[in-house]
Length: 163
Image (cartoon, rainbow, N blue to C red; front, side):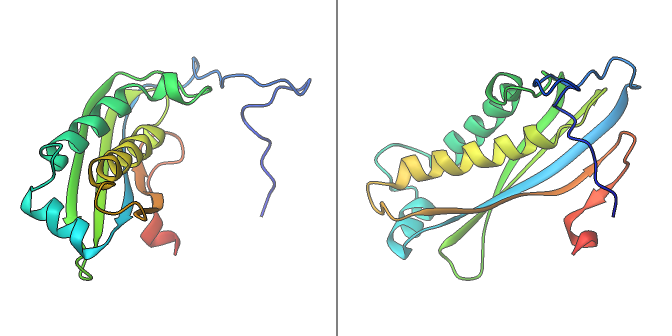
């Protein structure tokens, strides 16, 4: 396996944003996930929409979408991208106390949207924590990861295919 030169470090050792100006604009997409593990009481309140702060799913979905749009300001060397689409969805795992959050992002640009999808999943998970912490302060956010990406020079990548 070849060792790749870090893309954000210049020859003199300083940090720099990767120059993507010579790259072609292509359709790009990414999916990421985060898992939120909570007590059965917190999960029940979330499912039954009995939280005092309102509808946590709508709030977390909106927070994830808004966060994806701010990735270029949150991650210092990330490029600001014109997002064509961002989606945040929720599903309960079989244990009934783990919420799976899946975020997807797409664009036509010179660089990928992996960070946007991961930021959306992460911020949606943090919003779920914020809205349920009164019931369970021990909630854990786990397994924030890229599930797949497509587009660009490296083409398609999938966590499932890489496992």
